[in-house]
Amino acid sequence: MDKQQVFDRIAEVLVSEFEIDRAKLVPEAKLFEDLDLDSIDAVDLVVRIQSETGIKVKAEDFKSIRTLGDVAEVIARLISEQR
Image 1 (tube, one colour):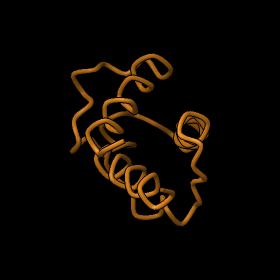
Image 2 (cartoon, helix red, strand yellow):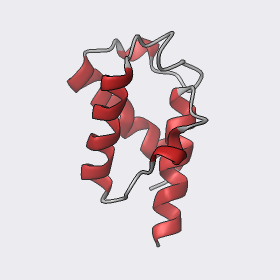
Image 3 (tube, one colour):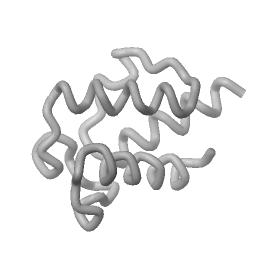
């Protein structure tokens, strides 16, 4: 799964589970400011990603994440490291 595929899947989850307008889901979108996610939403998103990909996401993996593109990049990297 490459970064674009990861981004597209995350976008699908955000639309279906968090009812976020698909038009807002661009790589530069800030999770908290632009998408109005809170910390509980962020945890829910990580849990969903873990269950779908089978990867283990650690808290330190998400410390520097600010945008949707950052999330896709970290998840794509973790997936490639597991191979």
